[in-house]
Image (cartoon, rainbow, N blue to C red; front, side, top):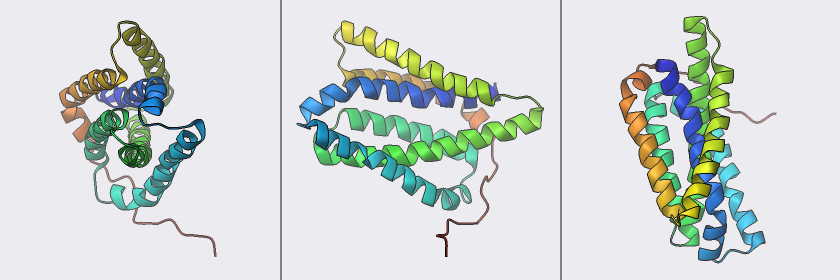
Length: 193
């Protein structure tokens, strides 16, 4: 069950992302983006991920990995709800940036945890966990298509998926928080000299 709890988190990212991808045309039209302005806006997500790279050492040297996994994926659900239901471009841009940073930190936490679980149990799970990511993406594409055919707007789709994810995370809270390791040393990112 501890491995399932962490493995499920891999599928969470792609479940949320699949609903988000299906909602892009609606966001584009609602917020009045052109193809070019939407493309430029989407660059905020990798900028957030770069920020996550710079902050990861500080964050993971202070917060146990299990605590981050528990909080990080719930935060990601909230960000995605706000992002898809953004009322203006500024809100959308802030959510894109936060999505990039949070997703990066979530990825570091789950990959490091699976690595530690593999060593503790002397079994390999990483490929299964990455398979769960792919499964989550396929599942979310199917869910989005099904819900669009019965005229459920993407704003409600993300709320439903996020509530399911948060419920599963809460039910696995003890397994996630049991991972109390600090996964980073106090080293830092330095530019070449």
